[in-house]
Image (cartoon, rainbow, N blue to C red; front, side, top):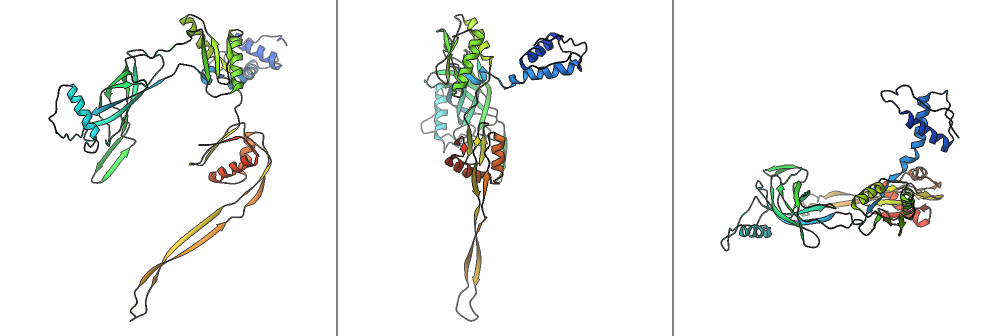
Length: 407
């Protein structure tokens, strides 16, 4: 279908002027694909607005490839180190209970040329032994600063106001990749006196923004062999097929190939600059992921139940009732008769009551949508804890078309 008239907005919509070429293109695509007729004599702003909404509605469900998949080899590496926090206001480790703190201070002083006499016992209050952790980002270069987290491993009461002494951070291979040092920032406060204690947030863990300097970079080969692998966050053959189709449609046939339901191989240019630009365009491509498998997530500790949109329920009958047992104990005093040589005895008398609410057999109608399933389960009137058992029974009977996962 061809438009006989081109939209030419002559005014402004509020304070924003709509470009004529953009609105005409949107109206043309919508009218051609969806066969929506925009009358020339109708209010132009309103007709163009609804045509643009109809065009952009399907695109709202698409997701970028960078949100669905990651590039193999582009990952962070965990670093860890052991160090000392000094300068605490009497809230450090109790050295009699944490001898490793005293040993660490001795080793540090010996490296600085201070030798303690043999058998000397140090009573430290302003020092705490800590573990320092950090994540080395991909492509990190020497001299780059990263954030670190400092956590007490002794019995220090607080790390507030302390300073981390120079600490090497090692990777899983035992090599040093960063050096950490700086003032610890603790997002909390506390005070105690005469047996009373007040504390806000956690005081045994702090953070040092830009507290570590990278000393060694991790080599990462990015497409040097002529291809890279995209790894989907969730294994799904349908989504993998759609990613391959989107990449091939944008860059040509056989650019992307699905190795399995999770890994997709993509051919890349030879030059590093062209390769980076190519990967940026690939990650910005929009793909509509396929609908995932029906799944019900249940948290047995909190009673939380979460379902996805693909959950379905067949027609079934459910009987729900509750059983409660109440045990009450009351003291009973047995008083002897006057002038008798008996003694007063205190005994207890227990009463047990069992209450069972009558359970009615209710018919749950099958539902093909999540709203129907929620409506059917709400009609039972069960508590979240009871719903856990009901869902397990529905799954065992085959009425619940979903996978149960208990966390």
